[in-house]
Image 1 (tube, rainbow, N blue to C red):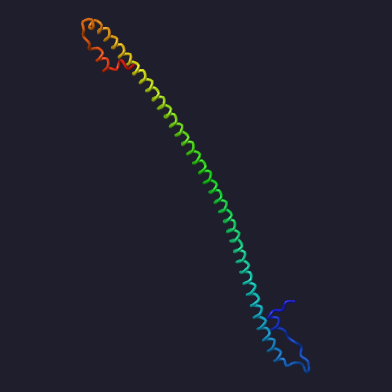
Image 2: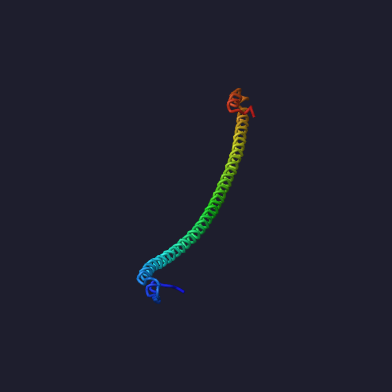
Length: 170
């Protein structure tokens, strides 16, 4: 049974012969009612405070859960960004290696062309030297052919000319 301060103040006792002093009982009941009312107010106040604290605690738990979810999401995003950066770096390195390979192949092809050009120039030089030697030989033979009639006449200029041109060396 719940007793309220109003129940205490409205309580009437039967009067009996040689009973308690009614004024004293009523004064005490009044005092008890006031104290009881103060206690009821304090209990209600504490219940409200407890309810507010429970609500605040629930809000804090919601915030904590949200923060944990945000942290997990941020960690996942960070890992995804890191993975994407690693993949992009690998692609960049692969592209760079491919370009380097193309550059090396181009340089090698150019080197081969230069070697071919050098070999062609050497071949042309050998041909040119052979052509010059043939020309010198043919001119030497022409000079000898012209020198025979001159020898008969007693002129000796052909061997000296031949030494200057280099015909006897070959």
